[in-house]
Structure formats: structure tokens, C-alpha cells
Length: 230
Image (cartoon, rainbow, N blue to C red; front, side):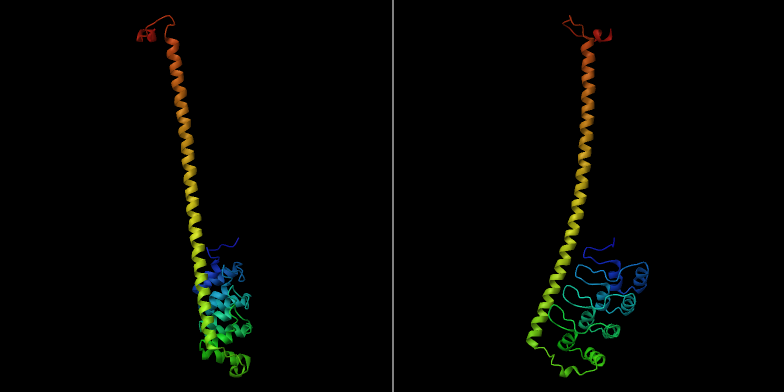
């Protein structure tokens, strides 16, 4: 079973996220699957691209990480690299064969993002790769629409963060419930032991009373220590 954190990230996700390339190599060599997704639908390649971790990105690509997988927001690793202006990552993904035509949940390709966010170096990379002038492609997006789309993207990101927080809260609550359940079991065990001890004491008391009753002469109306000592 693949070990994950409360939001579905594996050790490979975290190593790619923080740029620990030696760990990425080790995990892949031990059989970690690069196509496993977290709760947001992201692979380790998404996180390496998002944070611009080039060595980890190259290692994942060399091991067959899916280049064009789209997360729950429709973003590929190329979308995330473009949004964060990671030029080296964009170049590597394009050279590896990443699809530039895919649209995210807001209907944006990486070209739309590069134009809307004024990323001239990314645009130049795309022009060189595709061999055509993007200025004549008719893909200029209305600025008002882009503003609304950016607002929607921020909302989606906030929702994603809230969902992650909720998942963590649920996880913590489950741990507390488990601890409470263990305490209840311990209390119940102690109560049963106490009942058993009380019953044993009652049995001993009954035996003592019976013994005393046997020692008292049946016809005597008085009970003294002499009778008991005889």
C-alpha cells in the first residue's frame, strides 16, 4: 500500500515538491510510481514543475511520468510551470513532448496564460518551439474576461486550500476519537476488575458469617467469645 499524508501526497510527491532529487531517484529506483495522484489530482511531476525543481523534473520524465496529466483544475505540469514563469521547466517539458493545446478548467492554454500574465520569455520559448508568430494567432484574450478568470482561479485555489485544511482537521479528529475509544476500553476493563474484586470480598464475608453461625450454640440465647474459642 502506498503511504500518503492527509491530502494524499506520497513520499515521491513531497521529495519532488521540496527538490530533494537524491530522494526522488531513490524512491523511483525502489519502485515508486510517478503516476500516483494526490487529492488535488496532481502527480509528482506537477509539484516539481510548480516549484521549478529541474533535476527532480528530469528524473521523473526519464522514468515515464505522465507529461499531459491534468489535475482537478485541468492544469498540466506545463500550465503550472508557465503560471510560475519557470522558463527552464517549460523548455524541458516542451522538448519532452508536452501538449501545448490542452486547456484547464478555465479554458486557458499555456499560450493564453503567457499572454495574459505578460510573460514575454515564455512566449518566446513557445514561438521558437512551435515555429510561428503568436501575435497573429488570434488568441488575445479580453482583459476583462481574464480578470474574471484570474479571480475564479484564486477562488478555486482557496477552495482547494480549505479542502486540504478540512481533510487535516478530519484526520486529527479521527485520531482523538481513537484515543478516546482506547480510554473507554481501559475504564471498562478497570470497572470489570473492580466488580470481580467486590464479588470476591462478598463471598469471603459470606463464608465468615456462615462460620460464625456454625460456632454459635443453637439453644443458647447469648453469644460470647467463649463459645467461639471452644
